[in-house]
Length: 98
Ligand SMILES: [Zn+2]
Image 1 (cartoon, protein in one colour):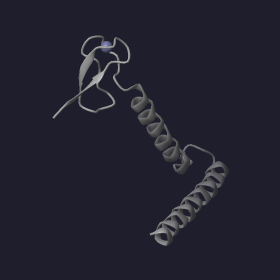
Image 2: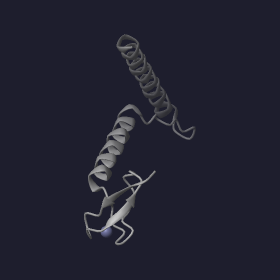
Image 3: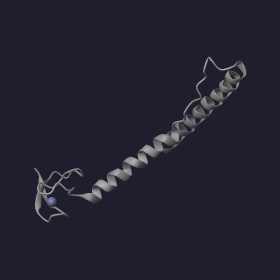
Image 4: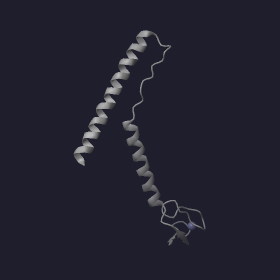
């Protein structure tokens, strides 16, 4: 069953499946701009959270001199240790929250 919604742009009634992406049959403008904005905000927040927890690991290049490789390996080790600790804390939080 589909509902109808009055287009905020041209004022004509248009078929509406309650999707935020539904567009007016007459002028092609978005029928529910508030829902679209809300969905975009949610999407952006999700992306930000993903970026916060993803760390770019150091790449050890075999062409680097030995001391560079040495320090990069230490850095990489620290990064991996850090990621492990963070994952452990997140796991613990999830466990305690559940
Ligand atoms: Zn319209």
